[in-house]
Image 1: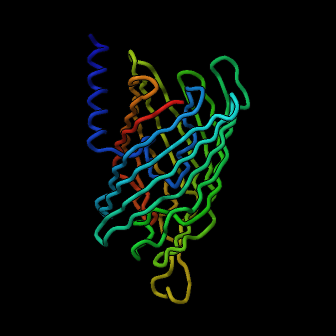
Image 2: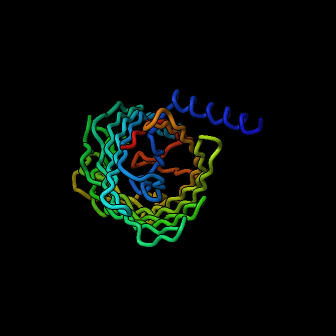
Image 3: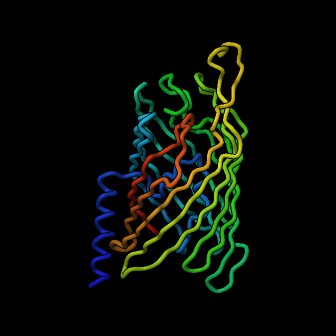
Amino acid sequence: MESMQVRRIIFALVALSALCPNVFYAQCSDAGVCVFGSRHAWVGHRISAGYAFGKSSRTDDLTIHSFQVEGDIQFFYDSRMTVRFPWSRISGPLGYASGIGDLTLLWSQTVWKVNADQVSVQIGGKFATGNANSANLPQAYQPGLGTNDFLFGVSYGTEPWLFAVGYQLSRGRSNNSITRLQRGDDLLARIGFTTHIDDLIVGLELLTIKRLQESSVLNPVNAAGGSFIAVSGSDQFQANFLARVSLPLSEPYSLAGLAAVPLRSRSVNVDGLTRSITLSVGIQYAL
């Protein structure tokens, strides 16, 4: 009886996510580094798709609609490539911008495995395929961040726990004509716990991101002269609590939902990545 009640609650969360969806894997208010630490509990290839809804703080009042397609290609038993490609529409008080986002490629290699314990190394990049100058709006409205970033991470899994750290190196400057934003690097740490309730897979995570340097933008006083100023307080620390659920449908399909809330949010949103809440839903097809 208790199990049935829990299952009904989780099903309600999934239904709520379907009404207010975000990305299949949570858009964790980051520039790409949240790709690290994804648990691969399957063998073979996989493709997923999701529709996204996101909302920033009341200060910026940005609304984000996004579609994302993600694929995992298994090359060897312990090696796989993850590909992510989004399309977004961002609207706010200044107008709206839309278009394809930035492509993410990540290679994951298991380097040590004993029974249920394993260590994996992940390396890849986020590439500036998205427009950073759409509709002549600031960077926060753009579907692309305008930089090519290097991604590197390490994860350790021991059932039912997962631990991961990741680093995103971003030294380039966006070509956005209004802000010419240069972001600092991001350091990520996450802890996840996964369990089964009947046919459902339920996971809880704590995810933290630290921006290691202050970002910089064009000096509004001397923008024509090409001088830049640091954005005070933009080297922020962020913490999110995530709850996710996966529900098997008719094989080989499954439905996944996720809810995330900031335990410590970013007060500066010059890059447009801050979210006040994340709700997500998506469907997965395993090959």
